[in-house]
Image 1: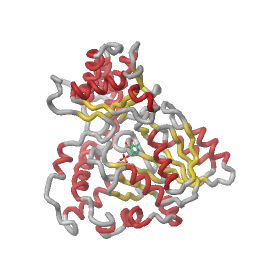
Image 2: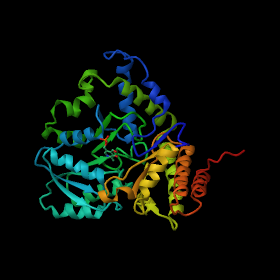
Image 3: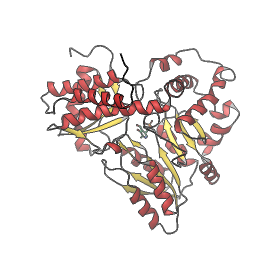
Length: 405
Ligand SMILES: Cc1ncc(COP(=O)(O)O)c(C=O)c1O
């Protein structure tokens, strides 16, 4: 281990790199939790979160990870015995479905393979076969972090509408919020859930459930219990009620700073564009490596790829060798295989490229991967780093942002 000194980088699809500003925002003494700055902060946080999700609906904040938000969304809208459909084309969609089963819902899975887009036509067909229109909700994951497929939210919504079902449309945008374009109201999403540790660049442990009037009304049938109940968290005037107890003060300070960076300084359109440009650099490198090489992207169609994560499939064992070398020698941690068969654990890995990222971070990660392949005699096509640089230059030229010297 000669080389692995210096600052390490976590290049997994969440938790993502936390900006120093966001870390430092929490580096302070506990504040007054009854009045003053902390209390005043929360309206602005709600406002900026809603802007990020592109909704005029409500948002409830939970001191939990994404699993908590999954459960909150279900418990606030549905009752045991309700029938729902899960578009199951990856690890996280199936896991959300398993949680739905655990809370007593009847789950109908539309199962597809890990490299497939959740097919709107299959959804329309399944819903049309349900003659008595009894499906109460359709669940999808926008950016499926296991496979790096980005599902087409608007097309899936249109499929529900075509079928004549009144089902709620619930979207997990845990790996897409602050990375991929996501427009809750325009795409007629009824419930959207997210979490702090990915595009939001904030420590793990806060999650968010956005809901519109239709979802709120369906909540009258439900009994979520006091902790999960979204009404007070979203709508109460009382600070204590909004957090159902002591607020996660330091987390909120960090989140405030992250939202300053994303919403108020860079701007959401620019954030989406940056993710796209950096993702295209990653994809260009992978296209080059895969020419005669031992690895290729899981999602072949660029229009179906998430911009915050890329899943790579390799010859047997090669994925594990690249990951191990990068971590041990280069201080780069790549994401593991998730959702593929257990016997293929060494044959897949994921590159996280979400959140607080710039070009030197991405090119650094790609160059370390190249070094891992060269050092271990893994076959790969040539010119990957050059291809990544060209992809960036082409994009900047197209966006007219190359500075004139
Ligand atoms: C798309 C997606 N949904 C849900 C989750 C679960 O979130 P958490 O691990 O915070 O509970 C993750 C986590 O990686 C995810 O990527």
